[in-house]
Length: 125
Image (tube, rainbow, N blue to C red; front, side, top):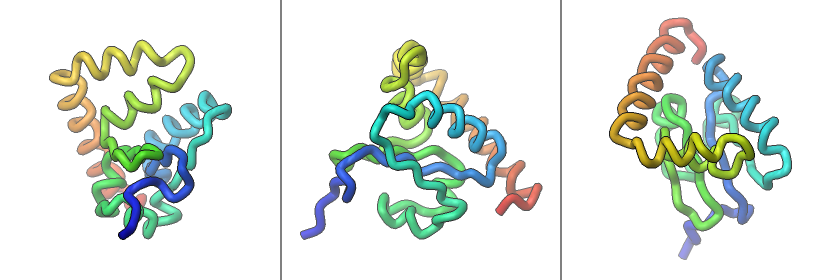
């Protein structure tokens, strides 16, 4: 039986570098999390990586995905909160995001949908 744990035993972040806004956010987050043991996977350059989370490429292009070492997968604002909770100076954002989900979830989903459509129209993928 195949394990649902990350094969590397570390947290993996699945993001889409073809979106300039997403790419800038991930570059900033990576800089802030240099000391953390995180595997960063760009689904634009590695589209087959979505099979690691049983995901659809278009879903991962639209929303950030994080897979913890224990196999738990978080999507969207929950994924952002997970990263922020491990980032000095951003833990308050994680706390706020998790407590205000009734606002942050629809806001994230609206922005993600808009960015996804904008990127498609611009031919970024």
